[in-house]
Each structure stands twice: as structure tokens, then as C-alpha cells.
Image (cartoon, rainbow, N blue to C red; front, top):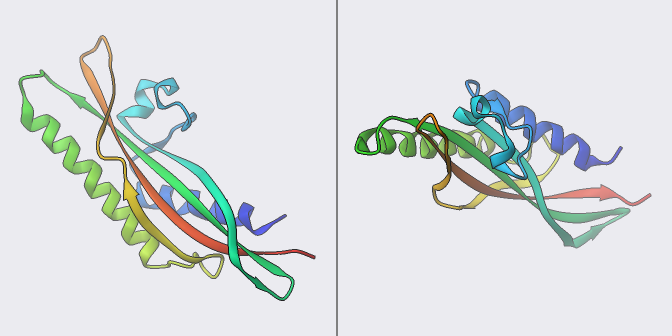
Length: 152
């Protein structure tokens, strides 16, 4: 097994330990495909684009990869109640900060990566409206890291 498998598992564990009251989206690729109960407080993780790093050390090569962590929340209430929406939006940013802090406290993921860091986010996105008058919103946070894989 290569190092990316261990990194993958570590990222999932870290996010689950940070967003303890959330459920993992079973389809993070198409957010709308997830069950409404999961979308109420959900998270999804996508290992994104990768590229060759610029370092070759001994029999190891460096690789760079991006990770998208999506966080979803339901906004229940009438459209005229702006404070409910604002509260949910702030909760998404609070969750994002929890994730940034969790990864900044151990940026090398226990010696698996070099500098796992927050890069940017998508801004709050609207997912869809259901017949129950629940709006779902999402914030996708982009992180990046580099790591070494042994070639031999």
C-alpha cells in the first residue's frame, strides 16, 4: 500500500473527529444525491487534483495533491427570516475554522505529509430547496499538501 492510502484515512479520521455532530456524505461528488438527513449537517471529502512535485530524494519522489472538504447545513424556516440563514452561514465558517485549526495543529499529519494547509474556499453555495421548505447550503474548503512516495 502506498502512503496516499494512509493519508486518505488520516484526513477522514481528522475531519470526523473535528465535525463530530455531522454525518459523512455518501456521495461527495454530487452533493444533491445525498439524503436530506445527511445534508442537514454533513461533510464530504474529495481528494482532488494531483501533480508531480519538484523534489526527488533518494528513491522517493514528491507529489502534490489538493483536498476539498465540503460542509453542508440545512436552513429551516420561512424565507423572510434572515437571521436563521445568517446563523447557518456563520456556522459553516465556524466549522471551516475548526478544520483549519485541526490541520494546523498537526500540519504534517504525523509525519505523513509536508505542510497540509488551507488554500481557499468556494464561498457559501446554495444546494437546493425541498418541499419541506428547507434550504441547504454548503461551503467547500480547499486544502493542499505534498508528500513523498517510495519508488522502489
